[in-house]
Length: 167
Image 1: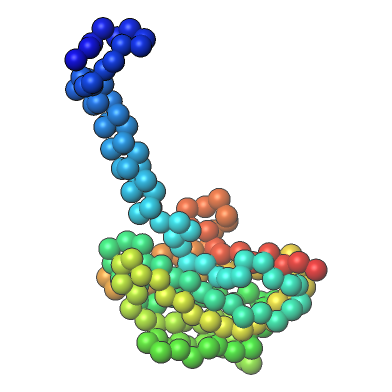
Image 2: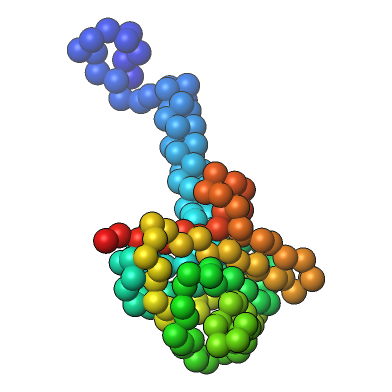
């Protein structure tokens, strides 16, 4: 084995010191990828689509992840005053209750156990207002009696979901 280190000398075996930095880099890179894959993305109650037509009719889907270790039991969406809900899709495995003021639906609560790491989806239909955006305020309830309010501005820790409206 040649270990002179000069260019052109044949090296038949690398010293352990040269292998160790490469191993450290590989392990570090794999750990970073694992953390990125496990980290929640957009891990809060959201309403889709996030862009729709002002004054148009839309099919909205409420996505509810359970990102912690405690199962979600229910989610309630407040319907803004200028939005008119025209229907709620009935699905298997959950129930819903529409709260009304007169003929208008002002809130919808879906009840379903959503285990940690799972995502629930619930659908409703509405007529959009003639405005620039809709802020969907939500309350997520958990099996231990706690709740999370998703009602803040986009820069808050728990932002309300937004739907931008276009002409």
